[in-house]
Image 1 (cartoon, one colour):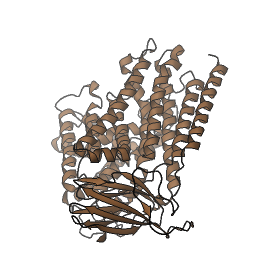
Image 2: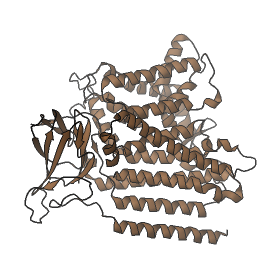
Image 3: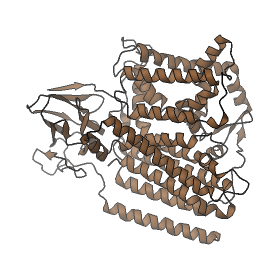
Image 4: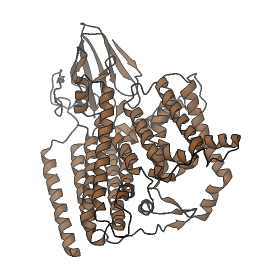
Length: 151
Length: 441
């Protein structure tokens, strides 16, 4: 193949790839920082719901993200889901368990612990002050409930 | 009840996932650049001679026996301090031994080798220890009881690198002193014993850190040619490296362990493993093995394809995977930079802080015990995402150019295009997989 023919072939393939990727990008939802009033969208079976009245102003202090955690028969629910949280947003964890356990929510250098007893629901809240990806897990089972993506 | 507490493990805070648009753009760029290189790049090998600038004064400085000894003793002292923390310290998060092994050693060796070349091999504390023992015993460090044949190459390192991958990703309680002590002792004993048995060459053949560091050093700007240090281009450096036997397998494990580390954080994996009755350790071992095997097989198949078009008077086709393995090194480096830079910055600082108090007695030997970790890197997720993307793409670019150059030297001139496309495809797949893993669905 002559040098010119090679170049044209390469360019054609290259442009085709670029057009294809641009087409794909325009259909995929870009991952933006979740406005405080919206439910996280890119997750599977998450039960996070905003609890405070939302006025449309994206004030991160205005509403909170509630996540219901359940432990039953050695299984955790949710299991490995991603939750989008805005920086500065309050996160409320409500736990029900059929066995004694301790929930660890890694938040930054430190984290918070929620002790839960069998049959007695517990809850805890914290403000997500640091950006990053954090795990919320059951310490005794060593299983991850959710991963908080704080932006 | 809520209690703010320091929790277990290191690296509990991770980078945010790469935005999806970054993944697609990155993949597109990788594909485009790969095609351009395949079709438009040079057709005659360019790096037959490494060239570069000779540095006789630097060579004299570095080869000065006093300088080498001082560097080796300094590095050995650092390791001895960490060993103090490991074997005599307290089993707490604040023990610097964990960060020393998982951040400073395993991740730190990448930038160290990129910048300083074969510094690791020159100052490996195992070599220093072995030399000390041989001095006391009046034996020659190069000679052991048996001779290690040439074909052994770095195959023993396959076992030790996989072992470290297992420790890093699968071993339960890997941030507990009891576990780390056993592994550290095993490493020390097996390597020193092997060195006594086979001579110093065993350390190059079996030490996972030295094998990793030596491979990364091939992409640095330093090369020793006929004993003299020269400043060369990384591509020329890579091209003049003849990888020892077993290199494709070792690089496949390195790439596979980084890839599995990311894959184990995906929602699908967590959900599947947690819902399964099989123990998590089994899943993780299988995952690590599978990732490694996929990478090894696809790379070897692509190299075998190339072997069909070998030039008449060149190396035999069965050597092709080993000879082409050099082009995997930039991809390994790109992956490591993208996945572990944040860990190095954060846990690296934490380790430096904790090194002032190795025994947990409240010391402040280096004055760093009261400092806090600067976690500012997490406040710039977009910058981090861009750096990760750039690292993977740059690794890919250098890798395919290196593969192209090597292929030109190995295959028939008229088959240059036909021979290369499976290798190119394999590398594009590795790169796109790396990007998707950073997106961590």
